[in-house]
Amino acid sequence: MSKKIAIIGGGNLGTAIAEGLIQSEFSRPVELAITRRNPAALAKFAERGCMVHSDNKKAAAAAEVIILAVKPYNYADVIQQIKPVLNPKKHIVVSVITGVWIADLQKAIGKPVPVIRAMPNTAIAIQQSMTCISHAGATGTQLSYIQELFDVLGRSVLIDEKLMDAATVLGACGTAYAMRYIRANIQGGIEIGFDSATATLIASQTVKGAAELLLQKGTHPEQEIDKVTTPRGCTIAGLNEMEHQGFSSSLIRGLVTSYKKIAKD
Image 1 (cartoon, helix red, strand yellow):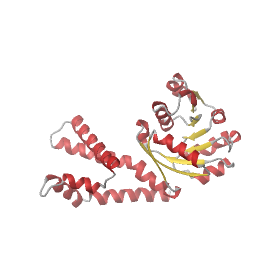
Image 2: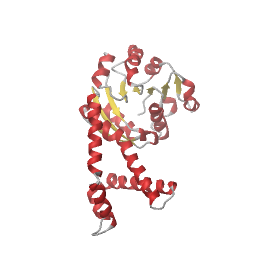
Image 3: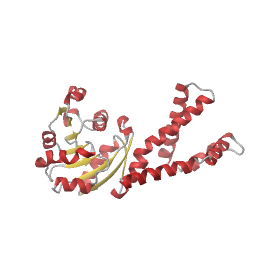
């Protein structure tokens, strides 16, 4: 059963979520409200039937699911705006705000409203996000609904909130790491003879295909690597040279460095 959803914060992430919900037909435009200080920037959503305005309190009052997609430094002020209309028997609060813990949200809300924290990545714009979810006080039915919501925007997984910083590194920062690998592949492709556009297509589709092999078949990367490496072949020669230059270790060290940076801050 569809619910009325208010997206508080119609920036890049908020509008990407709205677009995905509409495109997937998870929600009808008339069931969505999107707020932004400058509602004119949301004109394309208004034209499709979404409720668009700058009144966070009004949007929250009319909704059943409230998605907080504001900047971390704004969350407390926004919660104060909507707090008077929050109803534990009616509302589910979903936060996609980086670095704000469930306990922080609960303290600001001051009511036993179910709070769910979600960490999507930028691929949510094309409904291909990896979203990690944790919660406090949500029923099984409420949690299933929110998982279903994020599953239409990609894939989701339930995790303990203590792993949310690690999820940020692996799933959100990980997008940038993957892009850097693809960029290096493109540069190498140009050096061995391809034009930039063709190298970009080949490198991007190859990475997409490799990822789908793991997701669809449930195999380990090494199993798939074994299928394309032959004795004295060019693949194993290239892989070994990459490892000699620190390919895997540099990636692991980068992940750990990012994690330490988040944990420190």
